[in-house]
Length: 321
Image (cartoon, rainbow, N blue to C red):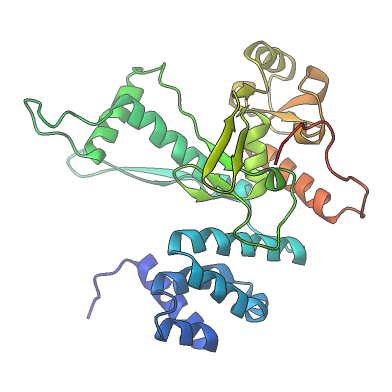
Protein backbone atom coordinates (compact mmCIF):
# COMPACT_ATOMS: atom_id res chain seq x y z
CA UNK A 1 0.00 0.00 0.00
CA UNK A 2 1.33 3.46 -0.93
CA UNK A 3 0.28 6.41 1.19
CA UNK A 4 -0.33 9.75 -0.59
CA UNK A 5 2.78 11.31 0.99
CA UNK A 6 6.00 12.65 -0.38
CA UNK A 7 9.27 11.21 0.88
CA UNK A 8 9.92 14.44 2.80
CA UNK A 9 6.49 14.40 4.49
CA UNK A 10 6.94 10.77 5.48
CA UNK A 11 10.37 11.50 6.98
CA UNK A 12 8.90 14.41 8.96
CA UNK A 13 6.13 12.22 10.40
CA UNK A 14 8.60 9.49 11.40
CA UNK A 15 10.98 11.99 13.02
CA UNK A 16 8.14 13.61 14.98
CA UNK A 17 6.76 10.24 16.12
CA UNK A 18 10.17 9.11 17.36
CA UNK A 19 10.69 12.40 19.16
CA UNK A 20 7.34 12.14 20.96
CA UNK A 21 8.01 8.49 21.83
CA UNK A 22 11.41 9.32 23.36
CA UNK A 23 10.29 12.33 25.44
CA UNK A 24 7.57 11.63 28.00
CA UNK A 25 6.71 15.26 28.85
CA UNK A 26 6.30 16.12 25.17
CA UNK A 27 4.09 13.07 24.63
CA UNK A 28 1.90 14.00 27.58
CA UNK A 29 1.53 17.62 26.45
CA UNK A 30 0.51 16.44 22.98
CA UNK A 31 -1.92 13.82 24.32
CA UNK A 32 -3.69 16.32 26.57
CA UNK A 33 -3.94 18.95 23.84
CA UNK A 34 -1.61 21.43 25.56
CA UNK A 35 0.45 21.57 22.36
CA UNK A 36 -0.47 20.75 18.77
CA UNK A 37 1.08 18.24 16.40
CA UNK A 38 2.76 21.18 14.65
CA UNK A 39 4.40 22.20 17.94
CA UNK A 40 5.70 18.65 18.32
CA UNK A 41 7.03 18.64 14.76
CA UNK A 42 8.87 21.94 15.34
CA UNK A 43 10.32 20.64 18.61
CA UNK A 44 11.53 17.48 16.88
CA UNK A 45 13.18 19.51 14.15
CA UNK A 46 14.96 21.76 16.65
CA UNK A 47 16.08 18.81 18.79
CA UNK A 48 17.71 16.97 15.91
CA UNK A 49 21.39 16.40 16.82
CA UNK A 50 20.70 18.30 20.06
CA UNK A 51 18.88 15.52 21.93
CA UNK A 52 20.88 15.79 25.16
CA UNK A 53 20.20 19.53 25.36
CA UNK A 54 16.51 19.04 24.58
CA UNK A 55 16.18 16.55 27.43
CA UNK A 56 17.64 19.18 29.77
CA UNK A 57 15.42 22.03 28.50
CA UNK A 58 12.28 20.05 27.58
CA UNK A 59 10.07 21.46 30.35
CA UNK A 60 11.04 25.06 29.57
CA UNK A 61 10.45 24.63 25.83
CA UNK A 62 7.04 23.08 26.46
CA UNK A 63 6.07 26.04 28.63
CA UNK A 64 6.97 28.33 25.73
CA UNK A 65 5.03 26.13 23.29
CA UNK A 66 1.88 26.29 25.43
CA UNK A 67 1.91 30.09 25.30
CA UNK A 68 2.66 30.55 21.59
CA UNK A 69 0.98 29.63 18.31
CA UNK A 70 3.05 27.38 16.02
CA UNK A 71 4.41 30.37 14.07
CA UNK A 72 5.71 31.96 17.26
CA UNK A 73 7.09 28.69 18.62
CA UNK A 74 8.97 28.15 15.37
CA UNK A 75 10.91 31.36 16.05
CA UNK A 76 11.51 30.38 19.69
CA UNK A 77 12.66 26.85 18.80
CA UNK A 78 15.10 28.11 16.19
CA UNK A 79 16.45 30.66 18.66
CA UNK A 80 16.94 27.89 21.23
CA UNK A 81 18.81 25.79 18.66
CA UNK A 82 21.14 28.69 17.81
CA UNK A 83 21.84 29.29 21.51
CA UNK A 84 22.65 25.62 22.05
CA UNK A 85 25.01 25.55 19.07
CA UNK A 86 26.73 28.76 20.21
CA UNK A 87 27.20 27.55 23.80
CA UNK A 88 28.38 24.11 22.69
CA UNK A 89 30.74 25.65 20.13
CA UNK A 90 29.76 22.95 17.67
CA UNK A 91 30.28 22.95 13.95
CA UNK A 92 26.93 23.35 12.26
CA UNK A 93 25.48 24.07 8.87
CA UNK A 94 25.41 27.75 8.11
CA UNK A 95 24.19 30.10 5.37
CA UNK A 96 27.33 29.44 3.33
CA UNK A 97 26.44 25.73 3.20
CA UNK A 98 22.99 26.62 1.83
CA UNK A 99 24.71 28.42 -1.05
CA UNK A 100 26.78 25.34 -1.87
CA UNK A 101 23.63 23.19 -1.93
CA UNK A 102 21.82 25.42 -4.44
CA UNK A 103 21.07 23.91 -7.83
CA UNK A 104 18.80 24.24 -10.86
CA UNK A 105 17.99 21.13 -12.86
CA UNK A 106 16.50 21.67 -16.33
CA UNK A 107 15.14 18.64 -18.18
CA UNK A 108 13.35 18.42 -21.52
CA UNK A 109 10.44 16.03 -22.00
CA UNK A 110 10.11 13.88 -25.12
CA UNK A 111 8.08 16.65 -26.71
CA UNK A 112 10.65 19.32 -25.83
CA UNK A 113 8.71 20.88 -22.94
CA UNK A 114 11.04 22.07 -20.19
CA UNK A 115 10.75 20.90 -16.58
CA UNK A 116 12.59 22.90 -13.90
CA UNK A 117 13.50 21.74 -10.42
CA UNK A 118 15.89 23.39 -8.02
CA UNK A 119 16.90 24.57 -4.60
CA UNK A 120 17.96 28.08 -3.51
CA UNK A 121 19.18 29.53 -0.25
CA UNK A 122 16.51 31.60 1.60
CA UNK A 123 17.85 35.01 0.55
CA UNK A 124 18.18 34.13 -3.13
CA UNK A 125 14.75 32.49 -3.10
CA UNK A 126 13.04 35.55 -1.62
CA UNK A 127 14.91 37.85 -4.03
CA UNK A 128 13.73 35.73 -6.98
CA UNK A 129 10.11 35.85 -5.84
CA UNK A 130 10.31 39.62 -5.29
CA UNK A 131 11.63 40.11 -8.82
CA UNK A 132 9.12 37.81 -10.50
CA UNK A 133 6.11 39.18 -8.61
CA UNK A 134 7.16 42.77 -9.37
CA UNK A 135 7.24 41.98 -13.10
CA UNK A 136 3.87 40.22 -13.18
CA UNK A 137 1.47 41.54 -10.49
CA UNK A 138 -2.00 39.99 -10.03
CA UNK A 139 -4.43 40.42 -12.92
CA UNK A 140 -7.69 42.38 -12.45
CA UNK A 141 -10.61 40.15 -11.54
CA UNK A 142 -12.98 42.05 -13.85
CA UNK A 143 -10.80 41.89 -16.97
CA UNK A 144 -11.72 40.32 -20.33
CA UNK A 145 -9.83 37.13 -19.40
CA UNK A 146 -9.81 35.09 -16.19
CA UNK A 147 -6.91 36.11 -13.92
CA UNK A 148 -3.80 33.96 -14.20
CA UNK A 149 -2.69 31.75 -11.34
CA UNK A 150 0.33 32.75 -9.29
CA UNK A 151 2.36 29.93 -10.84
CA UNK A 152 1.46 31.09 -14.37
CA UNK A 153 2.35 34.72 -13.60
CA UNK A 154 5.75 33.71 -12.25
CA UNK A 155 6.43 31.60 -15.34
CA UNK A 156 5.55 34.59 -17.55
CA UNK A 157 7.80 36.84 -15.45
CA UNK A 158 10.69 34.41 -15.82
CA UNK A 159 10.32 34.55 -19.59
CA UNK A 160 10.36 38.35 -19.47
CA UNK A 161 13.68 38.18 -17.62
CA UNK A 162 15.07 35.71 -20.15
CA UNK A 163 14.17 38.07 -22.99
CA UNK A 164 15.72 41.07 -21.26
CA UNK A 165 12.57 42.82 -20.10
CA UNK A 166 11.94 44.39 -16.74
CA UNK A 167 15.52 45.37 -15.99
CA UNK A 168 14.38 48.21 -13.76
CA UNK A 169 12.48 45.88 -11.45
CA UNK A 170 14.84 45.60 -8.51
CA UNK A 171 14.89 42.50 -6.35
CA UNK A 172 15.21 43.33 -2.67
CA UNK A 173 14.83 41.42 0.55
CA UNK A 174 14.12 42.84 3.99
CA UNK A 175 15.60 41.64 7.26
CA UNK A 176 14.17 42.65 10.63
CA UNK A 177 16.42 42.28 13.67
CA UNK A 178 16.82 43.88 17.07
CA UNK A 179 19.92 45.61 18.41
CA UNK A 180 21.05 42.76 20.67
CA UNK A 181 20.87 40.27 17.82
CA UNK A 182 22.78 42.62 15.51
CA UNK A 183 25.54 42.86 18.11
CA UNK A 184 25.69 39.08 18.53
CA UNK A 185 24.31 39.04 22.07
CA UNK A 186 22.10 36.04 22.86
CA UNK A 187 19.14 36.43 25.20
CA UNK A 188 18.08 33.61 27.55
CA UNK A 189 14.48 34.38 26.56
CA UNK A 190 13.81 32.70 23.17
CA UNK A 191 10.91 35.08 22.48
CA UNK A 192 12.80 38.30 23.21
CA UNK A 193 14.96 38.53 20.08
CA UNK A 194 14.09 39.00 16.44
CA UNK A 195 16.14 38.07 13.39
CA UNK A 196 13.83 37.36 10.45
CA UNK A 197 13.89 37.45 6.68
CA UNK A 198 10.59 38.99 5.61
CA UNK A 199 8.49 36.42 3.80
CA UNK A 200 10.57 33.50 5.10
CA UNK A 201 11.06 33.59 8.87
CA UNK A 202 14.00 33.28 11.29
CA UNK A 203 17.52 33.29 9.85
CA UNK A 204 20.97 32.94 11.49
CA UNK A 205 22.52 36.07 12.97
CA UNK A 206 25.63 35.88 10.80
CA UNK A 207 23.47 35.85 7.66
CA UNK A 208 21.60 38.98 8.82
CA UNK A 209 24.88 40.75 9.59
CA UNK A 210 26.28 39.86 6.17
CA UNK A 211 23.19 41.25 4.43
CA UNK A 212 23.39 44.47 6.48
CA UNK A 213 27.08 44.78 5.62
CA UNK A 214 26.29 45.70 2.01
CA UNK A 215 22.67 46.80 2.32
CA UNK A 216 20.48 49.70 3.33
CA UNK A 217 20.01 50.06 7.08
CA UNK A 218 17.14 51.84 8.81
CA UNK A 219 16.15 52.36 12.43
CA UNK A 220 12.75 51.55 13.93
CA UNK A 221 12.17 52.62 17.54
CA UNK A 222 9.39 50.62 19.23
CA UNK A 223 7.58 50.36 22.54
CA UNK A 224 6.96 46.69 23.16
CA UNK A 225 6.31 44.54 20.10
CA UNK A 226 3.45 46.42 18.48
CA UNK A 227 3.80 50.21 18.89
CA UNK A 228 6.14 52.03 16.51
CA UNK A 229 7.44 55.27 18.06
CA UNK A 230 9.82 56.42 15.34
CA UNK A 231 10.76 55.24 11.85
CA UNK A 232 14.13 56.44 10.59
CA UNK A 233 15.20 56.77 6.97
CA UNK A 234 17.07 53.93 5.34
CA UNK A 235 20.71 54.66 4.62
CA UNK A 236 22.72 52.62 2.14
CA UNK A 237 26.08 51.88 3.70
CA UNK A 238 28.03 51.46 0.45
CA UNK A 239 27.13 54.19 -2.04
CA UNK A 240 27.08 53.49 -5.81
CA UNK A 241 30.29 55.54 -6.45
CA UNK A 242 32.12 53.67 -3.68
CA UNK A 243 30.83 50.39 -5.05
CA UNK A 244 32.17 51.20 -8.53
CA UNK A 245 35.56 52.08 -7.06
CA UNK A 246 35.73 48.74 -5.23
CA UNK A 247 34.90 46.82 -8.42
CA UNK A 248 37.66 48.65 -10.30
CA UNK A 249 40.19 48.14 -7.50
CA UNK A 250 39.47 44.53 -6.46
CA UNK A 251 38.00 43.19 -9.75
CA UNK A 252 37.17 39.80 -8.17
CA UNK A 253 36.51 38.27 -4.76
CA UNK A 254 39.56 38.98 -2.60
CA UNK A 255 39.72 35.43 -1.22
CA UNK A 256 42.90 33.82 -2.51
CA UNK A 257 42.11 31.57 -5.45
CA UNK A 258 38.50 32.80 -5.85
CA UNK A 259 37.77 34.43 -9.22
CA UNK A 260 34.09 35.37 -8.79
CA UNK A 261 33.72 38.71 -10.67
CA UNK A 262 33.38 41.90 -8.65
CA UNK A 263 29.89 42.75 -9.87
CA UNK A 264 28.70 39.50 -8.28
CA UNK A 265 30.33 40.18 -4.90
CA UNK A 266 29.32 41.87 -1.64
CA UNK A 267 31.21 44.79 -0.11
CA UNK A 268 32.55 43.49 3.21
CA UNK A 269 33.62 45.61 6.19
CA UNK A 270 36.96 44.40 7.59
CA UNK A 271 36.05 45.99 10.93
CA UNK A 272 32.27 45.43 11.20
CA UNK A 273 30.28 48.64 10.79
CA UNK A 274 28.19 47.73 13.83
CA UNK A 275 31.47 47.63 15.82
CA UNK A 276 32.40 51.15 14.74
CA UNK A 277 34.18 50.26 11.50
CA UNK A 278 34.07 53.02 8.85
CA UNK A 279 32.43 52.57 5.46
CA UNK A 280 35.35 53.66 3.30
CA UNK A 281 37.72 52.12 0.78
CA UNK A 282 40.35 51.26 3.40
CA UNK A 283 37.89 49.16 5.42
CA UNK A 284 36.06 47.55 2.50
CA UNK A 285 36.89 44.68 0.19
CA UNK A 286 34.86 42.59 -2.22
CA UNK A 287 33.84 39.11 -1.13
CA UNK A 288 31.69 36.60 -3.00
CA UNK A 289 28.55 35.65 -1.07
CA UNK A 290 30.03 32.31 0.06
CA UNK A 291 33.23 33.79 1.51
CA UNK A 292 31.33 36.79 2.87
CA UNK A 293 29.07 34.48 4.90
CA UNK A 294 32.12 32.54 6.11
CA UNK A 295 33.68 35.82 7.28
CA UNK A 296 30.63 36.78 9.32
CA UNK A 297 30.23 33.31 10.84
CA UNK A 298 33.85 33.53 12.04
CA UNK A 299 33.43 37.09 13.35
CA UNK A 300 30.27 36.15 15.26
CA UNK A 301 31.98 33.17 16.91
CA UNK A 302 35.00 35.32 17.88
CA UNK A 303 32.65 37.92 19.37
CA UNK A 304 30.85 35.32 21.48
CA UNK A 305 33.82 33.29 22.72
CA UNK A 306 36.34 36.11 23.28
CA UNK A 307 37.60 36.83 26.81
CA UNK A 308 35.22 38.81 29.08
CA UNK A 309 35.50 42.53 28.50
CA UNK A 310 37.89 42.10 25.58
CA UNK A 311 35.48 43.56 23.07
CA UNK A 312 32.61 45.08 24.99
CA UNK A 313 29.75 46.88 23.32
CA UNK A 314 30.57 48.35 19.90
CA UNK A 315 31.15 52.10 20.13
CA UNK A 316 29.38 54.90 18.36
CA UNK A 317 26.17 53.14 17.37
CA UNK A 318 23.78 55.77 18.71
CA UNK A 319 21.00 53.20 19.02
CA UNK A 320 17.99 53.67 21.29
CA UNK A 321 16.13 50.87 23.00
